[in-house]
Image (cartoon, rainbow, N blue to C red; front, side, top):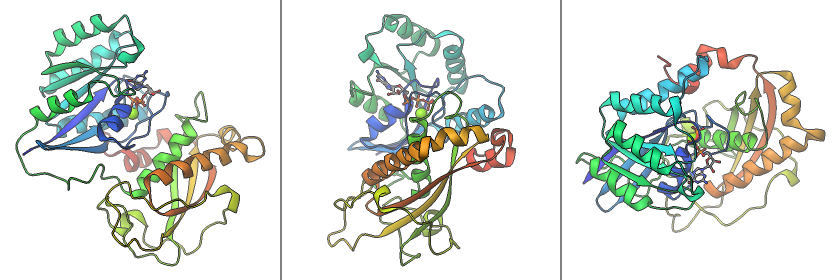
Length: 346
Ligand SMILES: Nc1nc2c(ncn2[C@@H]2O[C@H](COP(=O)(O)OP(=O)(O)OP(=O)(O)O)[C@@H](O)[C@H]2O)c(=O)[nH]1
Ligand SMILES: [Mg+2]
């Protein structure tokens, strides 16, 4: 069997995360029109009869002296080091310029085999021929494929081309897994996405999500019923205080049929568990708090409802969410926090 790691690399907003989701057939990574939406290396797993690809979505690669970007670039470098093959995503609707050249230089230097996906061809861009030529000349990719992540065009030939470059080996994950993210991280990302798509200017960049507590009602030891292969410690932090802030009934959504998006449901599903989550949208300045709270709390309420809707698509639990906004001044300049969030930042 073939099994390998494929790092998805490209400029901010090239469509890397949208493509990852389309390849996995599930929403694994959050996406938005705002550049630098992805901050961590997100794993998405694709299985075919010939083998398994573990895709590593990465933050958009670009030059900036800001400390946060330094850490984001390091996430890209580490994913590239871990990769057997690179899935290079180029936005066919944007002029390439220096930023695209910097990505191609990085990939060339890595010496890894490259599969290039020229994305957004549904936009019928006049730049397509120029971009294809540029990628061919700079990287001589193993395959150069025009794709549309939103319309699902040419994705199977992309998967097969990537798989061809993977080494022979044992599968890393069971074949019904499509991601390895723990529930806490996924919930925080879902909340961040809902906040990003409802805010503008500097706010999406100035925000992160802190999960203060997560606890199953009436119990705190059972294995969460996703097959994400994570322990309780990772999903329900040890020592989480019993009881969560009250959430008004109308802010939580009615139950729906049990669904587990990671693995098939058990034959006799137990009564659905209730998961209580207390989370903060953390911003840099007091003025940004008001923006996220909105008039009479309308904005935060809509973020919370949006997040609950998205969570229902992923988890089988009945989820209660208490969401608040707080300030962590200049967090993007704080090494310990960035290190905890994004890794070493070398
Ligand atoms: N028309 C069109 N839009 C696309 C396509 N793929 C992605 N997009 C849009 O491009 C924008 C950015 O998509 P993302 O998937 O978040 O891009 P990304 O490369 O992961 O961005 P960062 O994580 O910020 O680096 C979103 O508005 C997507 O809907 C595509 O094939 N066609
Ligand atoms: Mg992304």
